[in-house]
Image 1 (cartoon, rainbow, N blue to C red):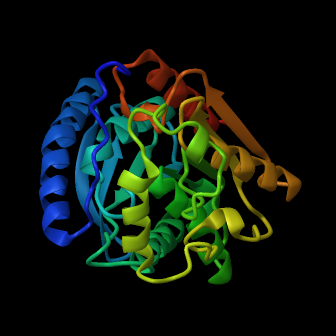
Image 2 (cartoon, helix red, strand yellow):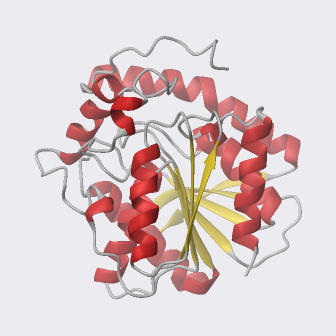
Length: 292
């Protein structure tokens, strides 16, 4: 996988370039997710969740009334529920519960706070239907950063926080101050701050301070009643330092937080479902979701 990784090229965030890249990545990854979901015996359908379109993944065998609210990655400028179906279908299958993946709005057409507004609306609708104690919020990369920001926004709105939180390589600091942003430059096969992350961060922030806690939730004050949290990363993940800083800050705040660091793995390695490490990590996460 490492040897086959293509050279990381600059990713412009002008709308024409983005629309073309969105089409290309959708065509590449969405069919793989459909095949994987069918192999597991899962089914998908589109629903409206708080006014936001969401893909619901139901497992072949539903063993739990709990549900997962899942946010896809893509730097806030691309991605879709369909492109993350390999992850959501696996979680649905192994945890035995339904997974809801909202199609939140993307920058630059819809910069901050559009994605957070959609996340909050989706969460509000899901806890109204199931109760907060039946909900796990989960996300990968930018989606994990969005999931984390959602915790602050939900608390500010007076909503109960979810039962659990799962963050796969969360983009929790858009300011790029973590040590491994530099030390793992060229080591993570998929991420480069200047080429892929900085343009996306600026498109999403749309002139706002990147250190704003609702953009970079690493700098937020965590609310009372914060859910039990699991964070995954790898020794090649450009966000390894951010994950380490985040887990340390959470533990210092009295939050039950576990940081899982996988040897030799890169940013959101769970996305590459054919790898045994990806399946092993998702199995652990499913156990965390299904456990007490």
